[in-house]
Image (tube, rainbow, N blue to C red):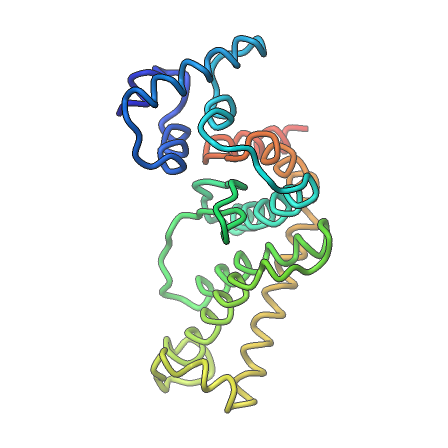
Length: 239
């Protein structure tokens, strides 16, 4: 509310939401000082107030190297491109550094009632790793959380939800143990992950130009909301 009061209509609701998510709680005096400084910087650039100007004020300088920042942007943009190609809206992309979290891709929640729903989420989850390999600096341990998510999804699809070879329900809390003890189950899960990775690779190769444009925009702006992501894709398709 305070940001809207002082930013007026210069920033969209989604952009203001990105700022609030980054800042958390702030006093009215802090908000006024941030917005005034952001407006001053925008005027120096010959522009109107934008999300980039405000984020530059409220966020500390990024301590990462340009190569590290680009690597994160490549990873997150890959998630976004693949999600949109599979029909899943993307709410926000961010390369803001938050300790152990180097960046974030936020997608819309969706029904997980069918096998195809799980498979779509698998493809999206592994897209960042594929982006690292295709366009970045190679496979990166930073994708560990994505691999964990994808493995859990494949395990649930096969052993908990009855959407693959068996109707037998297994307790989700014991699936990690089953992966170790049951070689056939582990091989089936690995096959699911390999197929999902291959699907992500195909999408990213077909949308290489869109991915590259999204990376550059993300590096410049640090956060892309849904409307910005849609505009980037719309402009790319119009070329």
